[in-house]
Amino acid sequence: MSLEKQVTDQYSKRIQTEKLYSGGYYVTKVTEELESSIFELLNKEFSDFKDLKFLEVGAGNGTNANMFLKFGFQLPNIYFNELLPERIKAIERNFPASKLFSGNAIEIDFDTKFDVVFQSTVFTSILKPEDRKLLADKMMNLLNPGGIILWYDFIYNNPRNKDVRKVDLNEIKELFPASSGVAYKKITLAPPIGRRVGRFYQLFNIPVLRSHILAVIRK
Ligand SMILES: C[S@@+](CC[C@H](N)C(=O)[O-])C[C@H]1O[C@@H](n2cnc3c(N)ncnc32)[C@H](O)[C@@H]1O
Image (cartoon, rainbow, N blue to C red):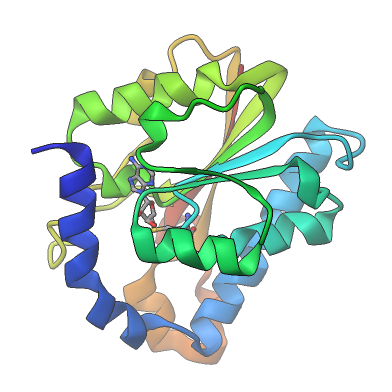
């Protein structure tokens, strides 16, 4: 099965369930933690964000771009990619006149290179190892010298959802053998715990209970 068909089938099943999981205190805490952790990592890599060229692969509705705009990235330097038609339309609505590659990220053909290529929960949607490898190579090739891949994805399988599959730290390192260095931290209190503990998010948010890795993968 092609990667395009695999992703399209998988997300057509998810439309109903995604509504159940949107919003709420847990999502607010996860988002705050993700934003502050990304900001901290980016500040270690770059002194100024305004001239950095940024690309998000598998950008969904494109709303992650708002976080980078808040940090000081400039809209003309922000590029998007997405595969699913309804999400492509949402990006076009949210960011008219933005630069967008519609289709499989493995085939991106922008005639420019980037300082930051971001992926957030895209690799876990890609099930075949060979597709993961092709996308990893593509992302590396899209980087300027000194550029980074910014990575946020989960490291444990969900037995109730066979449409996604974890990417653990060993696999991240195997996907990017030519990287000059990988820096990472575990973040995000795992959803089954985080949703139960409500207002006690911070108290339970210890490394062993976290489900995602935020990583910087240097060219
Ligand atoms: C879980 S969603 C995350 C969306 C967004 N990155 C976020 O953090 O909100 C994964 C997204 O990756 C997209 N995707 C998966 N494989 C892709 C591929 N090969 N090329 C482009 N987009 C892809 C899906 O269509 C989906 O919108």
